[in-house]
Length: 78
Image (cartoon, rainbow, N blue to C red; front, side, top):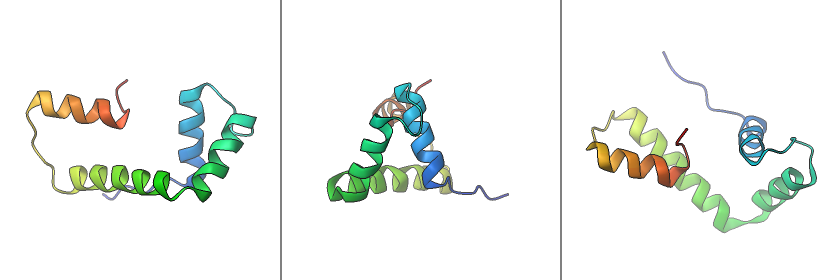
């Protein structure tokens, strides 16, 4: 079973949902424009994506404390 990658729209919805904003709100439009033109943010996003893919693909076992720090750092904590 392979997972499909989220679309850009799904990523933007997730970001905007976490900001409490609508996809077409001024803040989300601003974020989207920034992401399209910011090499630094794109590198950061790609490094987070690579880390998540590595974590999933290799089923890395981390001590609970390290796992929790990674989840916090990636902003994936519920």
